[in-house]
Length: 413
Image 1: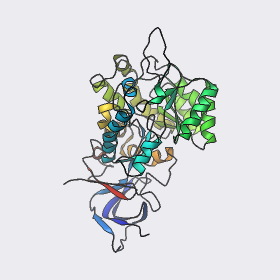
Image 2: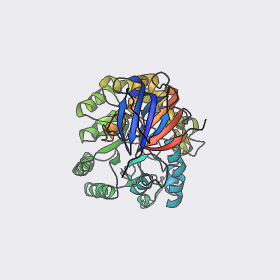
Image 3: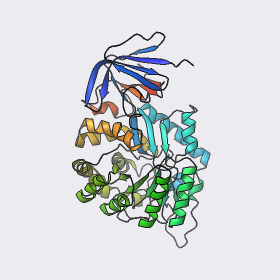
Image 4: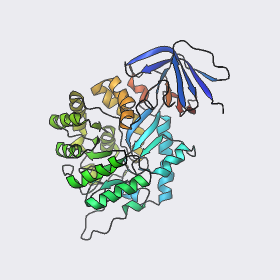
């Protein structure tokens, strides 16, 4: 079988290791892989040639914290949708992510093996999904969207596609839940290890799950050669989770120096998700976020920006995350502006490419323009090292998106 060949000719290749553009290079793609990155172009008879002179050629972007099935900002209402409706409402969300240049995402609760396969098979347009299945939450935890009352009805959360989480308690029960999520296609396990913003009854300062439960979850994930990601905000919640073997901390807004240093010592990653707090503060009530959740946003919004400096000084690697809900998904690229303002453009870019690939355990496969890597490639009108704004917005400067060697976006001039 002859593989299709695509040549990107004359572009400036973004070298993220060195933080420079390699001027006037040629990138050759055969099938799903990059086979050559060279300053000495060779003719490739029969190849499709794209003249990208003056443009930036860079790896496809990776968002390590999304909820593609969260078409409503009210996650309780989202979980109550018919499953078919929840899936169909996710399709434009996925298509828009791809158009912005996000060729891979790690879903932090909700997306499943079936949706992942639909994209892999080319049935729908969207980024490659690394699904967590349903996130695991204790009763009354961040994944429990039942309102307060005098009767706690059984939680049917795990039966609907639109639910991001399932409620499960006890060491034996969480072991079974992990095994079930892995059997159904999760590529990693997500747990709720502290209170959160979007849920109604759990203060942010609370820790969630006992140490024994977290350790059991980690044990089961490691037995399946994967890892656990944990929603956690406070230093206490972060240290508890990491001490039990959790590999990535999600959000982590209220971290202190001691907790950040402990993360670095244990080899943990963090995935800040700062744009979601800006979006929730400005648009949350408009798009259906319950009042009790809106009231929690201020406590973590500004602290999140300070956390970037704490993680950077401690040397904790930071992946890119957006965590947006409902109509706020369109602000995904604005996360770059927040990070670049604190960390600089190069670190913001690495968070969505090379660091994100390490988090996904895809080092050398994703997040890089190099021979042997999967051909997830963007052609951008502008230099993101100088102007991070070319990756913000809604993909206006992303002229070509190549995913697994296939041209999936061509900007209309």
